[in-house]
Image (cartoon, rainbow, N blue to C red; front, side, top):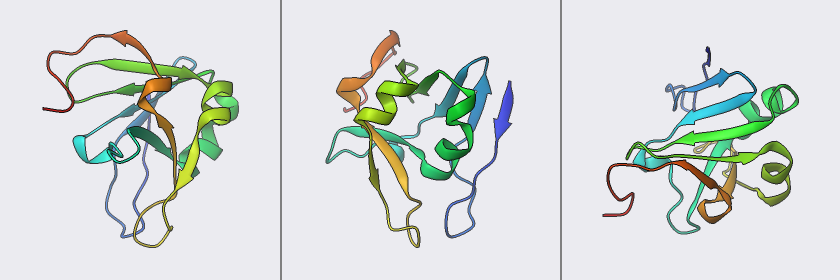
Length: 110
């Protein structure tokens, strides 16, 4: 498992990413869920650096659930959000487009 380090525009360390086999994995925290659009994302710089090396994008949520999407589908269904100054430009995908591969212990939206 290879960890990928990324910093926010303010210089703070952001959510951990890692490569596991052919999957790009992100450990999602509650604050990373774009609630207005019901989406979750990958920092655009991480995506650009890793997309040719992976076939699956996987998200591990705070409730323990795991959801994933194929790279081509992620690329086609995702949208960019962020200004690059205060918030890192992030490529988001709707939660509804992710496939649940492991159920969690509690609701994401209590």
